[in-house]
Image 1 (cartoon, rainbow, N blue to C red):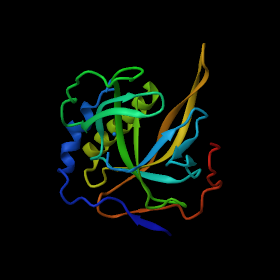
Image 2 (cartoon, rainbow, N blue to C red):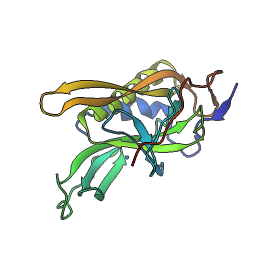
Image 3 (cartoon, one colour):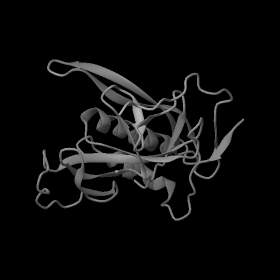
Length: 208
């Protein structure tokens, strides 16, 4: 059975602090990964500059200390400004939005994940979102962690699969929303066991 270490806990706050820290995360409201994870308009989870699809059925551990909130300012196709801080801290103060920002400053939340099974095992990614559906998904995970810590502080790390849902918008048609499906909780120090069988379907690269 494949195994991979989850997160080193050295230098992190006490797990008990998650009870209040994550419980305060709001929908109206980032992380250390250098590879960007997102859901595209077709409902596919993709990552990196080449927009590779996440392997179907792969499992990802969420670092419970990586939740952030703040603001981002987008231009036509690039980030013009970003202000993020840990959710235990107040939202960053805002100045005037960068010139060219289409929507000014937008509220953003996020977190870091580490793949624990499949072809991408060991990869760390950053997921941040400004969408209503994305913020709700992040909040749901944060609250799930807070509830888990109340029950068992020894296993605060959720291992999830990346899924999707959708709704019908009267103007834009089918809109996909992210779903982070919790498979189990594991500890910070030990290892997360990957499934004995490989995922049924692999990933593919998105067309440019």
